[in-house]
Length: 229
Image: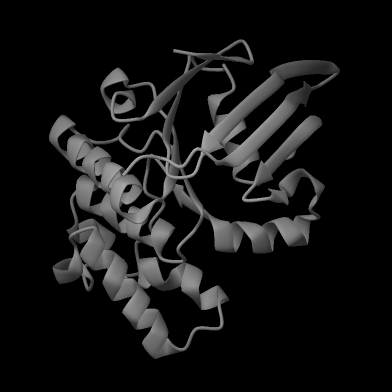
């Protein structure tokens, strides 16, 4: 299934800098970027180019100095911190390089965590968790702890946690960076399936050209400026 032509992410004139002592370090400069619903986008570029900063801005976990970000018709740059937190909880799924699973919780309990902030009853939470663990192929591992799972399996648990609230977009920061090639390929195929079958919009930061090849669109950041491949 191809991405819709209507953009779900609209970024205009976005700039971001950081303070380091008395210095101002520019990171992003005048970014304009549209992402269609159901699109798989890879952001590439050298270290320090602003890839993760852009991802964090889209996810609403950092704030811009200038410009606007509209996601699914919501202007997130105008939201307060509490409004942003509520918006993130329902609209963004996060996939990290090192999984960020809680070691003392089972796969099931890790995936259930985002649902504990909702009004769902226990039975409804169980239905959601079992459904997404089935999607990622780990229905038979739900009672295992992270230490009992391979790296690829841990990342699949993390993906299940990211999609359990049915978010609009998934943001993935080097999701295959800690995996061997076979496990990385499995994760990329799973992410592609989320796009093709479930109409998720995936925005992935990666240094790996093989990972980027799975994306529909590859955009490069260089010294804070965005260019197409």
